[in-house]
Image (tube, rainbow over the protein chains, first blue to last red):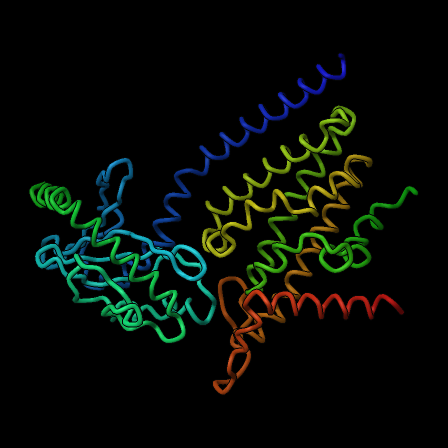
Length: 199
Length: 201
């Protein structure tokens, strides 16, 4: 009996202390982690996509509710007004999810640019989608966002990146998802942008 | 059987170097050694967890009831792994992105539990720290060695501190097989073979 009580007490104490410690570390690193995510993952892609942006896209970001999820939208100011919005989307690639940042022209509903944020594709093959951004950008830029994207092998309109068909399918998936998201959230996003203009 | 601190430390570097001699912790060994930087990062993260868990397990070795010791060890290890994960996310984010799922998987790395069970739960804190550091550094060096071979052949580069050093000229065609999963097995197998040849003398 004594041993049983000892077991319960030791385990309970151990897990309680661990839990408390972890909550502390989490609270201490939370803000920094969010900042790192924006700076390391999304920031560079945004800067690459929108070279002519005159605002700080990360500082001006706002969130839009999509059911239970929150989508972070980055407005891009060019020629004195918000001309584009960018947001993240993802699709299934060869080695896992591929995160793609998609920029949309607010007036025409066409894709302004697309770039990979996170991926776990094969180094040297699928990873070229990230290391050679023009490969991705040139395939999607200028196309209307609200459509189903597919690689040519699957009867679609997008040339697969040579040697990386699965990766290309993932990219198409991600951009298709982005299109669906955009068509759903377009009214709210436009309203938010108007608020930005008036403020 | 009482060994000195230096002996406990140095055994991890050669006589009991984890992936080659103990043949433990192979999952991350195979998975993350596509870049030298990743291998070293993984090794250091594991070392941190090893040192932390060895210290705590050794300190609590007389308190933890033997029937629930594994549960206690895993709780301690998981706590340290989560701390490492959060710290890496906060301070070395690009490395965290590369290692991804393999950071939380340190929890089930046999080396860490193995050292807690086989060493720290029977030895003093000082010896346990020496043991953890030795094994951890040995593991880090092993990962770096495997990664160096794989990355040099598979991508033609050596990546350290966020910079890629190109080793060969433009005519070099990367032997991409080496940075994929089968290349990891072959590379590990050959290195095990070399280690055994050296050790059998």
